[in-house]
Image (cartoon, rainbow, N blue to C red; front, side):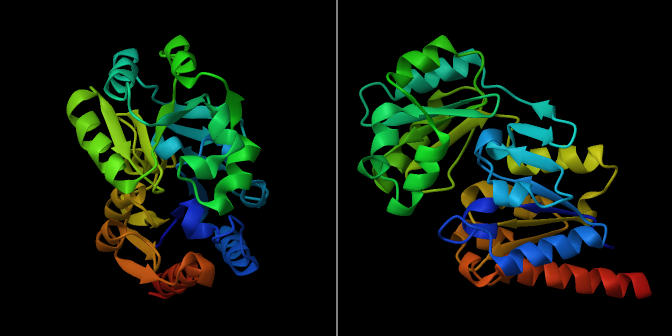
Length: 282
């Protein structure tokens, strides 16, 4: 069966380590679009954090954002599906992190907010130095994130808990899985515990999108690198993990391609185009 839709994770998958789109990956994406394949962004990023160099490619219309909490038709500028965190879940998260050495990012209708101190010095909170431009260029600084979250507890797309160590992240993950009701928890980078409604997840959002497009899961290909991409790898007709992917993502994928710094997405797309061409000839 031909692949008719490709869901692309961005950071550390389609984008290189500096957060940019290589020319080779761009050309492959454009070639896929010209062949009639629908390219959809599938990211942990919120709508307002998506990079212009990807969105400016003609033909990229749909975006799965915030780890599947929202799906957008960017051409029509409408949200097709959205799940907000329930107020009870938000209160559970705040209660279980009380007194912990953490800060927060919070997202409302695709707009990201973060603690002012974190925005000013992300590395102090566990972020990699190369993430500084992205964090400072997208997050709206907020003086008191706990108060902000309480004030907007019924409006939140998702919450990121920012931690300073992998050990602390794993400890909080286990606690919140037990204590926070109705949530989906994942992680795409070492300093973030990403929490959204239980109905979110890239796989659930991809299932919605292909249904909206009138396609089957066998016609979907997914690309990813992290824990938050594992469900997509399993759900898609074919899942591609880049070589730098986490062990969980690699195990869930059908094929391993080159790393994000070696144009693995282009490699995978070329494979898809070859298979589609052969299917068209049979």
